[in-house]
Image 1 (cartoon, helix red, strand yellow):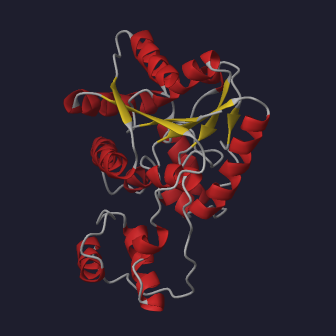
Image 2 (cartoon, rainbow, N blue to C red; image 1 turned 90 degrees about the horizontal axis):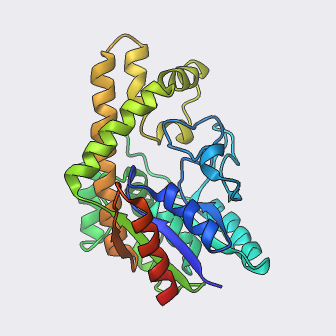
Image 3 (tube, rainbow, N blue to C red; image 1 turned 45 degrees about the vertical axis):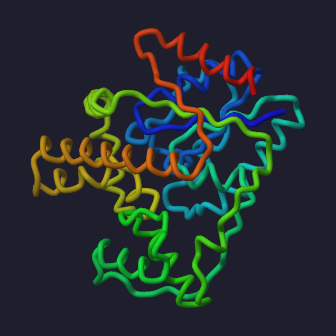
Length: 293
């Protein structure tokens, strides 16, 4: 039994493809998006709806409250239990999502290096922290705007005098895996991202975000996804709704670019160009590739 991974940037059709493959391959869908593990955060995270699931079992969605911590290592433990259970029952595990580190932690012999050291970095910009990282790891693959990861790498070096990426680096897959990436013309993708934000607003994004804002919860779960914190200035009367929505669109486009960078450098992905007008063609291309592998 092989594990199938459907990955790609936001708004490219991952959810739809994962359900179609699950129907055809006796499969079950497993979440690989760090924001979709949380309850009550549905619209901004583009979480699969009950209707979209089409009665296909979905795992590791809505498993945590937004007040709870949930790390990559927590996900690694949980997802491997689900993968092995699917395999035991003769089901095809289909991981779907855009969080590259979740995917890598799930499927590779990826070991987390614990550290008790925690530096105070609040006075440094992303660029300044990144320059510190380059001094100890000139060839780092960590993106300069992935602040949490940069800080963790600096903490690890301060405590151990070793490079975090060398510790975690592994090319050993734990399961036979097929990686399928979805892509499309960059301008088309950006248009789809912009349109998706408009659809989210019509679907109730403002009400969802206002409820979270009024809760005064400001955990990682709330502040990580794109779509909530960008609206907080609107609720406070400091920015117009138009400016806040444009910020969501801009941040989403930038995030999509970072996703592509990670996938292309970190995972052995077979890329498919999505045919949005005839999506069945994309489904068939994915099935053909799975059958060849």
